[in-house]
Length: 413
Image 1 (cartoon, rainbow, N blue to C red):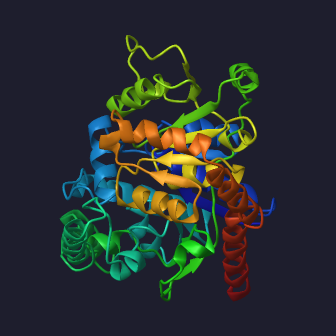
Image 2 (image 1 turned 180 degrees about the vertical axis):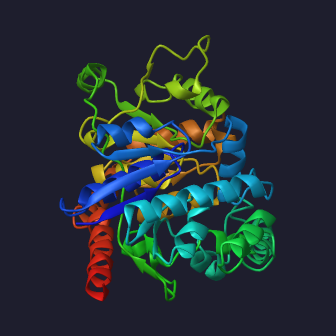
């Protein structure tokens, strides 16, 4: 039996639920232990029955948003001060030693990339392919400049080239990571890409999403991993599913904002549909939405197949993969390059339409929703994707790799 330490960014819904799925897939003889600095989605860890260690120092809401923007490649400014990075590395190193964890599983908890290496423990990173070093080095178009015309594509190619240099070559990692790395006896992390490249980078993608890419050493495909939230389906969902009007699922994950949530709800309010929308966490007490939009808390989206007719999603990999696994066609509005990449991949498969977030309050968004509801091709493609997903289990694949490493470590001891 081994303790397995999971270092999750616990204010990131997709990352927290992805790690919960991996922990569930481990052999019951092992003991998963989660740690984190913020409390937003800690209840999901507790509900899943796993031990959680609350750690400090934590961030304010503004600092969290700044960290998300940095992680997603939308900003260079970060809340990673020397004092914070040093304190977190100390906490994590102590926890690794206490648990004698033979591996560390992380997401975008960047201090894990120092603490695990300082303790000589291999770092496992279940991660979407988009915005990894492997993807950025090989991608000619990141969709920074939207549009299908020749000028737009040329501008996007130039923007992508600049981003590639900044991300993989420029010494723009926060100085704290270089300073603290040296203090802990590990190689300094100087580029943004180095902050997000682990020892084992486990790509949570379908095989077709990696077509045309070379998978370098240190990277391997494991397959989709998405949330299975242990909450019941609210009665309102069954009631709306039984109604004559189509039912739309509106999900914006944890990386959208109040303005987008209200715009999407109000745009869907103009259609002859019902909407179930787990967007309560974005709304203020005085906010109003159309009568046909039913706001809820977090839903067990993996159980909505056969109940909802289509979805409107922000493009996060977790929500996209849940729609794919349940055979639900969707409209996706990627809020940053990683999300856009996943929506575009589904658009190419025929089970989704990609729109810009700027179009949500405009006719192209409504038109896209009407198309995924009315054109049979989208539902046919969604059913084919669902069948392919049924043959995949990314969480189990990651668990087996972790267990192999545990076995190797035990044999060496």
